[in-house]
Length: 321
Image 1: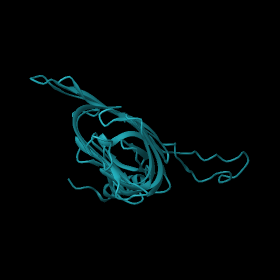
Image 2: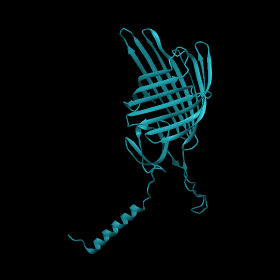
Image 3: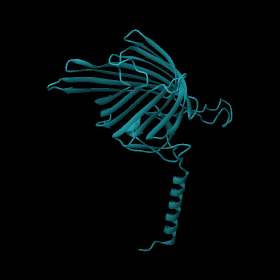
């Protein structure tokens, strides 16, 4: 059945009006959010898309930035302040201002606890217990991290491990790349004949790589270290500090973090200490993981009858909060 010309024109007019109405509808702007990642970094951008596994943002420096939800600790919306309405008796445009984005202060409190045990019962019984705890508090450009580490063990009834360390580090971002820090720590190690050791030192750092799945920082500073030994002697030395740390998320389940600190003496550069630690994590669930940890410490001038190198391999179960 053919349409009459009048009916045909009526349909064309109705279609044109409908298309015009759709085109004239206001386009809803993409929501702007700040994503706070588990490593303390913050990413701000407009949400392009979001599903159960990822969030895709549009930022000033990259059109589409994909962030797995497993890396996101918190998501905060950035809301626009409402412009004040016109004053009574004023014209339609009087008393109005363009809307401004008001950013909420980005805060993050996150942490992790790891506990492990190495047990053996045969001709020689062996028990080794170890644990780690880490808490991160971040606010705007300020980041504080607290680390605690202990190990205790006996082999054939003889003490083979008894150590405890705690570290506190404060970072303050000066811009997109540079930051300053201050590091402090204290602990003891009975096997290495150290009753008490402590250190403190400031420095500066540079965010060499800052991506959603990998972060690499380099640091340079000074460090004052003191040790009270079991034989009642004390060493108090100044060191330079050269360090780097990496956080790498391979996929939604496997990740690693690594840090290396090198301390050459200010007076004698050939005398030095270093600390190395790396952790591999396999996430069984969002907050539960199994971990493999490697810790290596080296001192060119250890106490008498103590080896220069101290290498540890640990396995543990970790819980994030």
